[in-house]
Length: 207
Image (cartoon, rainbow, N blue to C red; front, side, top):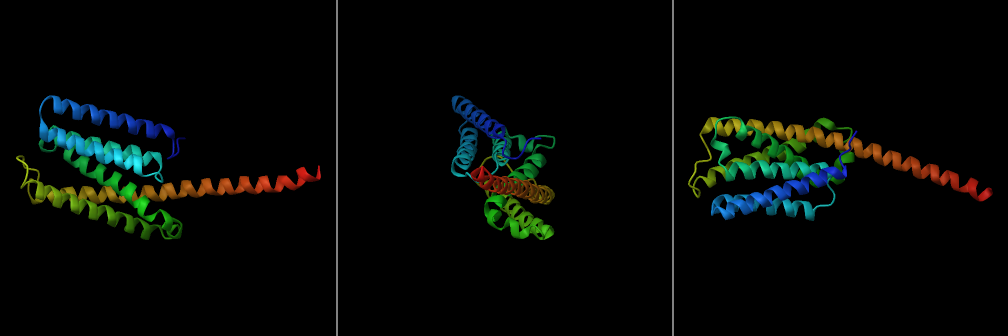
């Protein structure tokens, strides 16, 4: 079974970066400056995220880049206002990926202390994601004043987005618990190997 630090996840993330770069160049070639700016912004943000952080599991990198791809496509081709579930998927998955990454980075050192208080841990991480979702809605509302297309479609749209943001945040909090368990198992296995190695050294010296 693949673990969260499988190297292939990072390869997929870099492939996603390539797709973002190609789409940005395409929009520049077509002189679609707003779309190029949106794609370029998500490209720079995801590139900086991958280059600057070194503590996250590689799975989180891949999910972060995938969220950037989804949002970049929505802005560049106006997919948010098209019929279908694109907007709903973008909201849920983006808050999931962002909460997963930033929750891990912010609470990594305290994760072990939450091990026996999982409900509290989920509430703390989910609250971070819900706050990010609220900021996203504020950003969408502000963007309606500076871009030609309408982003916010009314109160129902805002409330449904917040519900989906909250769902993504809760899933991310649960997944952080799963990653904590994987890390704990890996640390325990490493400790057992070290103890076995130390126990073998005296017998080797006696021989």
